[in-house]
Amino acid sequence: MAHADAHVLIVTCASRPGLVAAWSGCLFQAGANIVEIDQHADLAEDRFFMRIAFTAAAPPDRAGLAAVAARFDAHWRLYPPRGRQRVVIMVSKFDHCLADLLYRWRIGELAMDPVAIVSNHPREATQAVDTGDIPFHHLPVTRETKPAQEARLRALIGETGAELVILARYMQVLSDDMSGWLAGRCINIHHSFLPGFKGARPYHQAHARGVKLIGATAHYVTGDLDEGPIIEQDVERISHADTPDDLIRKGRDVERRVLSRAVNYHLQHRVILDGHRTVVFPD
Image 1 (cartoon, one colour):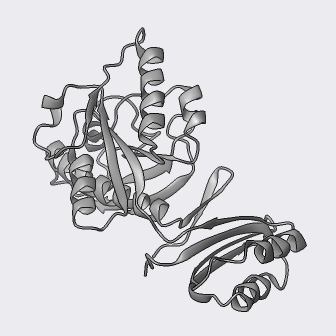
Image 2 (image 1 turned 180 degrees about the horizontal axis):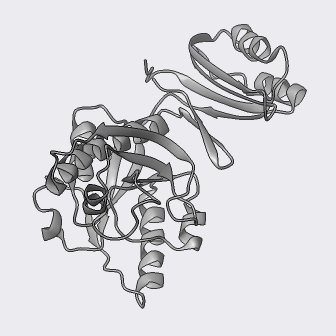
């Protein structure tokens, strides 16, 4: 269960006895009330990961937390009670993920404020989606214009104060420089056939091979195309009776729900990056 009024403490360090007791004891001494705690010890890699959500009448004792961190040589981050993160949503012609994110935002399911929608196609390409008064930016991309458009995108992210970029079926590959600049704060969604079915018309390729499962993967963007740390995945059963259009329809549904879950986990600070992997504590 998410607690909107709770601070969130994230801890990573080497795995050793006494970690949970030390951090929870520090919060107890500061008068905090722990409302949610998750931890994972990766014994193979000797790594420990923990997320604590807590409420407190007074500001958290950062000096006390820093002392515990020094004792265990731990990396820690403290997030204030959940606000609404500012996000930029990028989209091409396929607008189902955009529509789903905006719906979940409007009903209060996602704690975010869309500050811009960016597309490499004109507004008419997604006219079926009610974007309200969210500013829409058409940034067409070609090989010649890509550096300039990415510079405009970087400026837009800075001007809007966006904390997260969501590639909601944005069908352009970001440059290595852009991917690096957005490390840990850019989420992409793609069909889970990759790398088995690369290129155009992946659902048609899957149909031709008689697949029995299709799926979707949400991951952080890196310079390695579709190889970033995975946040969430899901699958959908397929039968011999399904047509390519059926696969597309079912694929849209699984892409929507996988992306929305990944975005929600990120917004609630439930995702901890661990090299090429992630540790995710679902709500």
